[in-house]
Length: 99
Image 1 (tube, rainbow, N blue to C red):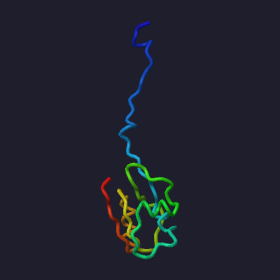
Image 2: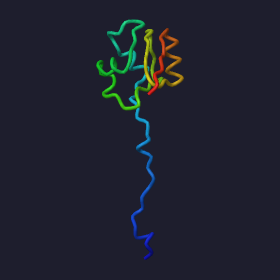
Image 3: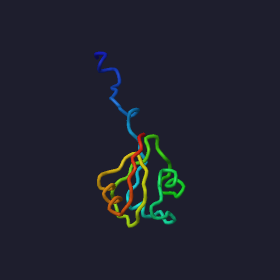
Image 4: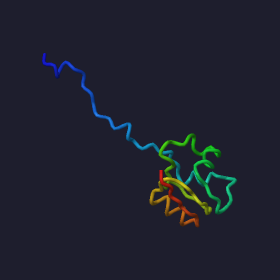
């Protein structure tokens, strides 16, 4: 049997370059009960409130599932277009941080 058939097959993996974000939805922002209108909400506040379990190495990603009824200043590394539209539609601000 030839050598190339005897050796184990190894596949390509790109796992070391994979982006790892902590993700939340707009509906999760509405669960922040004690946050004032216009308050600045970042990853540390969400971590202490229990909305995210742990902060991943590439930061926080906000997705647009759900609705929000109060104006908050959200600080994250990435916003989806629908999440940004819902937050600014409620009178809030989306601030993008560089990872």
